[in-house]
Length: 477
View 1 (tube, helix red, strand yellow):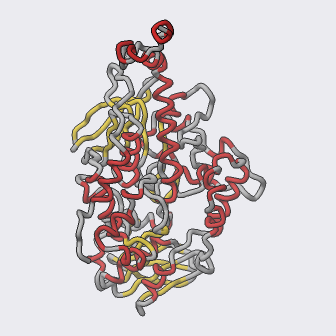
View 2: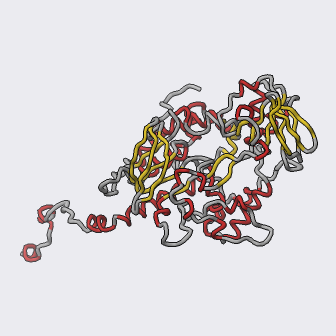
View 3: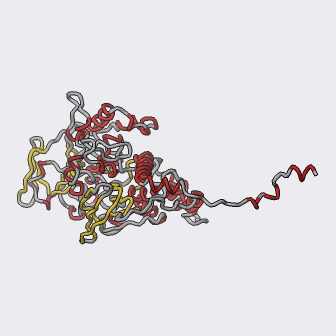
C-alpha cells in the first residue's frame, strides 16, 4: 500500500472537528490533589482519562503499578490468545469517534482490505493500537505507582501510595478502579494445588516463563479460554506434552450471553429486576465460559496435547521435584502445573479496600435467590449502582462509597457484561463520566450557583445599532 497521507490524518481531523477540550470547570478545593484518581493505566484507564477531559473535568490522575508502558495491562504480559475474543466491530475506547477507532488506525496503516480480512483483532495489534491511542491523545500515566490503601475522610479520600518503593499520600474526591480482573478479589487457585511448592505451579495471571517448560510435561487445569491459551503457549514453547483437565463432561460451547447482546437489553440492563439479573449471571456460570474455536484448534493440532474431560484432581504432592497427581482414579506425573481457573470476587481480600470492605453492599445482602439458585461466588459480587458505584450495606453508614466507581469484572452480576473489557465501554464509560460530572457539580453547587449568576459583560452597546433605530418623527418629516 502506498501511503499518501500521514497515518494519523483522520484522527487529527476528528479532533479538529470535535473542537478543543473544555477548560476544567471543577473548582479547586484546599487540600485536594485530584478530582478523579484512576487506578490502572490500561485500555479503560486511558479511555476514562480522555472522556473526562472531554467533559471538562480536570485534575485527573492515572496510576499504574507497572514499571513502564510495555508492562502495563495484560496484552503484552499475561494475555496469551492470538486474537481478542470480542468482535472487531464493537465500540472500544474511541467512545463513538470513528477517527480514533481501531478500524481507522488499522486501515491507515495496512489498508481497508486488510481490515476486512481479519475476523477478530490480533492481540499484539490491539496492544499497538492502545499504545498509539495513549500517545496520540497524550494521556499521562504515572508508572511505578501502586495504591496501597483508600482512607475515607468524609468528602474525599486520603490515598496511600507506593511510588517506586517509597510511601506517599495524596488526596482525591473520586476514585475509579480500572484495575483488572483481580481488582475486587484475586486469582482462584484450586485447593488441591496448595501443597505444591511455588516453583511447580502458577496461575495464568502470573508471569510464566514458558521457555523453561521446553521438554517438560505440563498440566493445565481449567476449561475456559485462558487455560487453552496457556496450554497452546506451552506447546508452542516446546513442552514435551500438555494435559488439560476439565471437570465438565464436555467443553462449554454455548455462549449464552449472546442472547442478551442487543441494544434493548444492553442499554437497560440496570433497570432489570434483581431476580432476572441474578438468573442471567447464574445461567452464564452454569453454562460455562466458552473458549473460541480457534483456541481449541490451536492446541488440537499438536499430537502431544491431551484433553481430559470429566476429570477432577483428587490430590497433588511434590515427589522428587515433580508433581504426583491423582485425577479421577488415574495417576500422573508432571513437571509443572498451570491453573487456568479464573478469579474470585471478594472485596475484603483487597488491602486497599480494607477500611470499608465490610460496608459494601454485596449481592447476597441485596437479593435472596429461590431455593436451588443460591451461589456463594455470585453472592460475593458487589451490588453496584448504575454508574458502577459501590452502594452502602447500611444506608447512611458509608456515604463515601458512592464516590468509588468499580470498572472491573466485579461488576458482572450488576452490569451483565464483562466490565473492564471492550463490551462494557460503549455503555458504561459515558454513564460513569456523567455521574462523576453530576456529583462534582452538585458537591460545589454554591460555587456554581454564583458562577452561573455572575454578571456577564455585554458584547456591544447601543452605538452598534443606534443609526438604525426607527425615528418616527424624522421619517414623517
